Image (cartoon, rainbow, N blue to C red; front, side, top):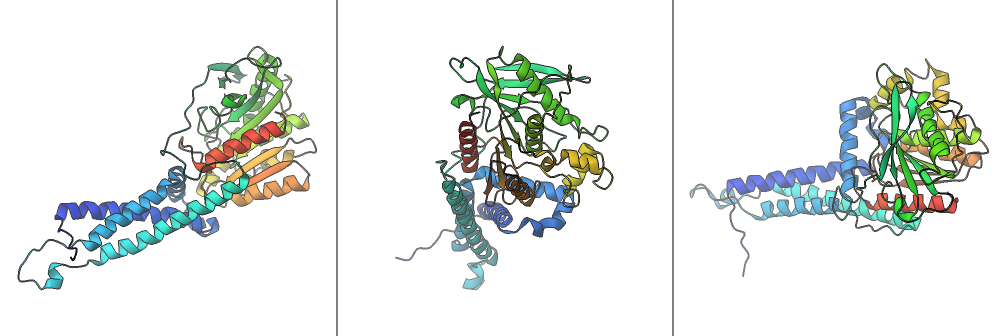
Length: 423
């Protein structure tokens, strides 16, 4: 018996063509970004719109995780149906080949979709092997559902101080049960956003760490704008939160002697700088009293951190915006400002143990800069761990409120880091 596919209506064929084209175009472009070195995309990074679209596509791909394979397969199936299904006859006097054409578009979609899907399977496998080598036990089949898995709610919102005309607040997430006599160890969480956007809010750690005995103080700081350049004051805003822990920590069942900082993206810069400056005793508070005692930070966790701002302006459009808003100009104009913001400046023999994780195809905070910073830590004999996830974009898989395989691995790495360094 010979199988003959039924004819489909023009409307159904149009729907299949659209579905196949969208799914396959997404799969091809998203997977291409995991293969092509970031340096090859440099021309596209010079315009803010194209850079934003590249980052958006990459973060969407990372949030989908294993579902990228499903999207690719769905596109291939639609293309295969189109290829195997003849167009309904329109005229009886047409030759047989014209009445039942094998259109080139379905075949092209089928071939390119198969290549994209194979690339998605390969990228997922490579990432899974990389994560497995970390020994975190993270499943390669995450996320269970996209855009889920990282929700949490704070126990209370506290006021940590007043910096200038701004009241600084923070969300406090507490473990359940009875606190130790000295209080809960506390992780100060610092959001990203290019130093100019973002606010405190749930992330991959605010719900996870309290489940394992660590309080999280998720803090705000004053944001940069076209007329306000907080290159020096943002880190002192973090100093205000640290001083609050030192002063009010015991009242809130927090242990001021066991503090870690955790920051993502631009927050990673602030987390590292605040920790290193606290160790050097050069960190001050932007809140009254400005001479308040600052507890020493005992460990740092930095996700895709912007630790080197001196070389970003000539590499991307968003980098130039950071230069103008956060620092106020270029390195040639303000070399001392950049020296202060660059994290390597604050390294000393007392710098706390530092965990860094980074996406290997980050088109915003470039992996080569984070990697170079890790090498500097090694040269200074600072305890550190550097983890680079192959193929991942800015966010390293923990953006968009999704518990991906990389996000789960980073959470476990962070927990192990805190425990190992007695924080």
